[in-house]
Length: 204
Image (cartoon, rainbow, N blue to C red; front, side):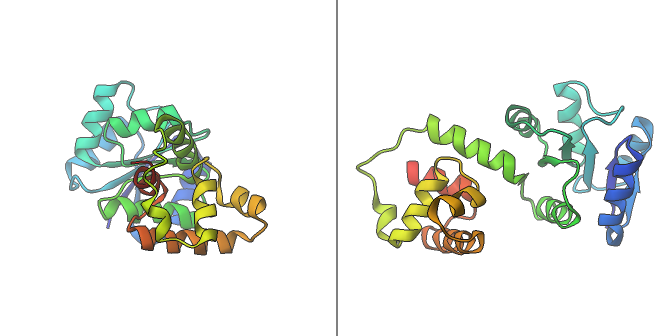
């Protein structure tokens, strides 16, 4: 399986190549090289693209055209909620930090290969916080609580504020591992797969 890498940074190039060494990564040097490479690949090929790459798409139309030819995973030095949401709207399949650890890069690629969309943890927390404020709660619709334990309800209430697992653990006086265990149980009981789906279900 080919994975394309696009960055002007020698450090990131080495870092990403090592992280994805088992997946035949191909580093593209410039826009022409990328065009030639995409011409020989299926539209499902993942492309890890450094937003600071000197040959990165410049306008919305360019991003949309790229997204039709591959599955772009855009990595930024300082990911921002509005930027990420805008890029997702243009067809980007993932958005995260350029210095994401190797295991995270692997998860990003696996997610988009399985037709998913990758949202980094920090951006996810920001999006949840924004949506929590934008979607008014309906106090009369509390059926979701019936399926959860008191402790699980408390975790959900903390999550709805946009809190990270670490912050939830600190506020509740429990470990992050316990928070993750509670969230896994909540996801299963409410038949959702991530925090955004949980938010939409609870607030709908």
